[in-house]
Length: 120
Image (tube, rainbow, N blue to C red; front, side, top):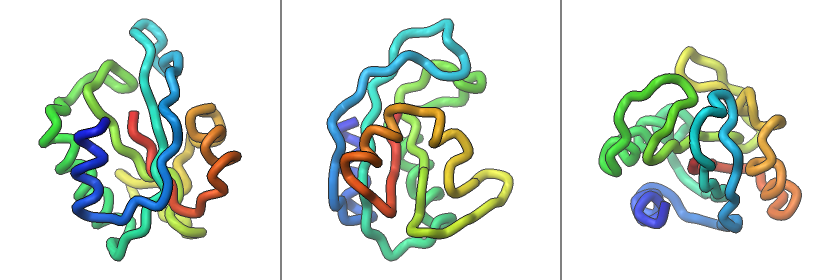
């Protein structure tokens, strides 16, 4: 995740970083725990451009295709983008499962963010 943060700093200004959260897997529970954190970002990139950059970072850090909700080295998601709603096949903002994930809800409660990116 530290490498991901360094890469994200190249495309956005990090306003806040949450603590790390150790969480049970969500969706496919037959796997180990995940370590998660949230970032509050400021960027000139639009939602779609930001997503494309995040996918490049994932690939650079060794992410490969796995089964849905399977084990992975890194997963970068856009949870919120300002007060924007965005819905295309590969990007839904706000993230459709944000309200079910404590590693998203805890930082929201503490950080009061408008832009939030989750790394897990």
